[in-house]
Amino acid sequence: MNEVVRRRIQFLLDAAKHENVKDQAVTFVMRVLSNYATIGKDAQSKPIKKINKRVSENAYKILKTKGIEVYCNQTINEHPKPLSQTWEWLKENAQNGLSIEKVWKEFCDFPMVTVTKEEDNFIKGKGLNSKGTIEERYSNIKIITLPKSPFELSN
Image: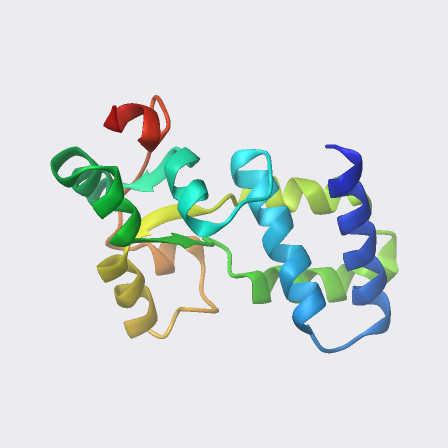
């Protein structure tokens, strides 16, 4: 964990101790931490898709058959554990000595997955966009880990 990550987590812990509402600042910090946990740095959506090795099997099929640009256009970076659940976990535990390392582990344990837009709509259609277990949310979605990044596999 680098110092940027450490400072962002400290901000989240402070916010979780003193605020009830997840405002835009908290949301963006959580997204940045998720990016670091997924690909080791902060980035926009498209570069994350090109680097992230955790993808759905259907997303990988798009990559193989249609190439990296179509893959990037037809996929979504999805949080297996919704950030709203992570925020609730932070609020429930921040007063009890929750450590920076434990928070970082939480983000690292649930890195983003690149899924197709149809799969994302399936999750939303079940009413599980911001709730549910990973098993419930991904009940019909097979997640795989690629041997190389999607960008490397597309060349």
